[in-house]
Length: 293
Length: 282
Picture 1 (cartoon, rainbow over the protein chains, first blue to last red):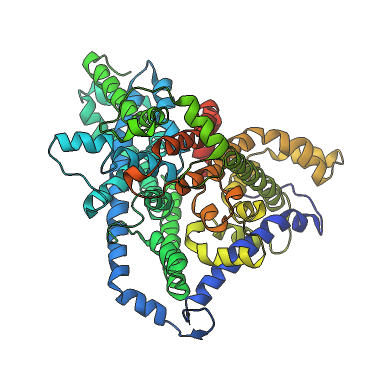
Picture 2: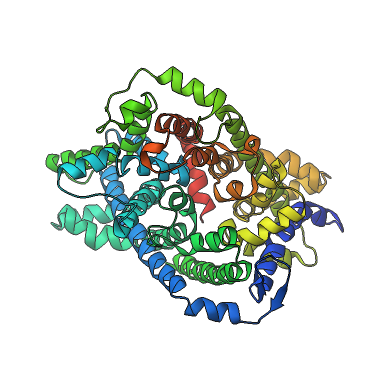
């Protein structure tokens, strides 16, 4: 869609665009280009000498078992976060769509976790599950479960998944609620007249009609799990124990900042950029489809 | 409601109440912990009713920070967070509203090129390009400054897109009438476009305020001076070791202070928040 009526000026549009473009170039294109450039280089330990090595950083990366493990961990993590996040929020949204009384109250009480910074969410859950003083740890101990995420990898993973799902649930909830409220009531009523019960109506009418929202949220949640959960990981497990929760973006940070491996970290950045671009393309193809839908 | 099924309504309320309780539980525990003494917290299990240390803990962190970890007062951190959130929100809105006005209301060479240039930035969160962006900011001498904290995060395409979508829905007749009346583009922008965009601006402000307030990785990298810590970073810096070594009562008080402002913004400006959230993603 384009405007028919436009203004004419030889310089004004450039002046209006200048701030946005300048910031984009300085803080986006320049660093992105540098990431690509560094990824072809190896720096010695003191940063005195750099050597152009072509694709060697990438070759090293894909032979590094830690990196491949980090890939698997990220995949598992994002599947768990997206899966649980979507399932729980869909259930809550379906219930909130059903109740007449108090719907706004429930909504208000469910949306505030969105405002909590991921790092703070991590601190909150780390406290509740703290191995020696946590309140849930105490309950679990009474139930005979030995809970210590500082030592046990799968428990650490569970902790970051819980914190991430909790942090993201309001977002999913709001989108599902908006999706549910846009489904025509006549369809539901027709099905009810034909004798379909609530469960049947949900799975044969509501759920298929919600599929664009679900798919959109799937992509958003995967992107969220890939990047925005950095704060949660850093505030709780810091990638540990023994790399059990070291997702890709945390490894970029760790190798680049803590281990000062500029080339390797940049190569990882480039791989991540490729993943984000692929995800964005998937999302846009889907949005095009939704327009036709 | 399609049909009357009382048991189902009861079930729906039960699920929702359970959901609300589970979601609110961490906040409640945080609040309780922030009103206890450290001894009370580390005596397992910690009490689940608020204690009497509310004033002590909060005035301690606000004026002097923690004693073992970062000793910067949290009031400074909250100010930094506020500055960062407001500058990012206002900056993003300001530069994107004029950029999308140029893209929608003018025809000029390279228009599509610039559009795509902004568009690509949608894809890359700051987390992906941390190290090189850090180098750029350090080369520009902007470490430990408000400019360094905010400018790199202002470069984002979401706001530009939202405004572009909205401008495209403004009736053509308005621009036509303005032109017939002899109004120039900036006059049209100021008198017609800006007033019409009020709700979009409010919605975006809420979303970007939260985004700015909650930034973590970026301030973590570029602030080394305690005076420049944001509240979220401050909490992280107060955590000095495992479990019982942390001053949890102070950390939890700081956590409450760090999460209340954005939570209040979301709850009080709910209508705009929902609008902003749904629209920035479309």
